Length: 142
Image (tube, rainbow, N blue to C red):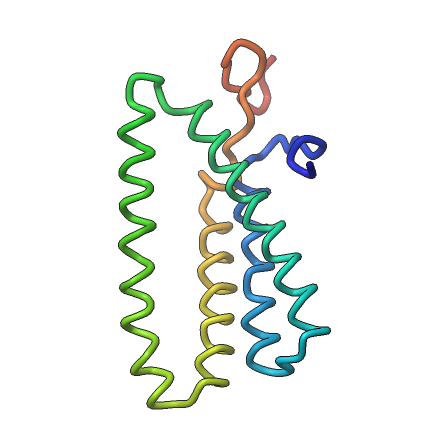
């Protein structure tokens, strides 16, 4: 419902910025893992990931030619699904070595750093929503 009401001009800026919130549940788990803290943290992170997903999908649909969209989605999914087991394999030994709490807080820090790095890229900040008829809106032109 939120994605229907919020229509940001800079899709990737909005979507990637929402990823900062995904560090919240890891911080909650690493510091105060109580239900009263975890529930709202997980809920807000769930809303944030959906905002990212909607912004990402709209950006792809508006900027990738229709005859290539399926291929781009396939590569996107492949990269995402390969990263999940790779991360799980990597984090196990780290947690064994340094402990669960530092690992959770470290993973939260990684999310914050990677999100900030993505936001620093000009193409993430500069991509704008397409205008009517699929015309890309370029700043300074009408």
